[in-house]
Length: 161
Ligand SMILES: [Fe+2]
Image (cartoon, rainbow, N blue to C red; front, side):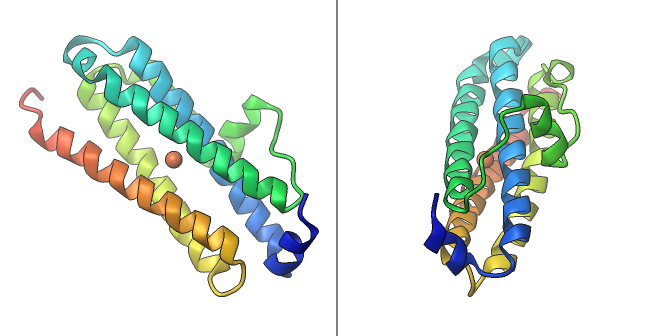
C-alpha cells in the first residue's frame, strides 16, 4: 500500500484506478484468449502456436504490472475472474470461435487496438500529474503497439485466405 503514491496521484486518482481496473481485466482476458488459442489452434495455425503462447505470457506480465500499480494506489485487484470480462470493456472474447490462424489474428487485432486506445487515454489522463501511472501506460502502450505491428505483419504474409 502506498500512501505517498496515492497522494501524488492526486484528486483524479479514482478515475485512474477505474482505468487501471479496466486494463487489468483486458490484460487477463487477452491472456486467456491467447493461451486458449495457443493450445487449440487448428490447421496452419499450429505453426504459430509459439507466437500465441508468447503473447499469452506477455499479457500475463502486463497484468502483473497493472496489478502492482493498483496495489500502490491502495486498491486490491479483483479476485473474481468473471469480473475481468466485465471490467475490460472487450466483451466475451470466445477464443474457441477463432481457431484458424487468420480468424485468431484478426480477433486479436480487434482487441489489441481497443487496448492501445485505452493506454493512450490513460496516458493522456495522468500526464503531468501521476508520473508512475504515466510511465506504466507508455510502457504498455509501446508493447501493445508492437503486438499490433507483429500481428499485422503475419496477416499481410498469409497467402491462404
Ligand atoms: Fe497487454
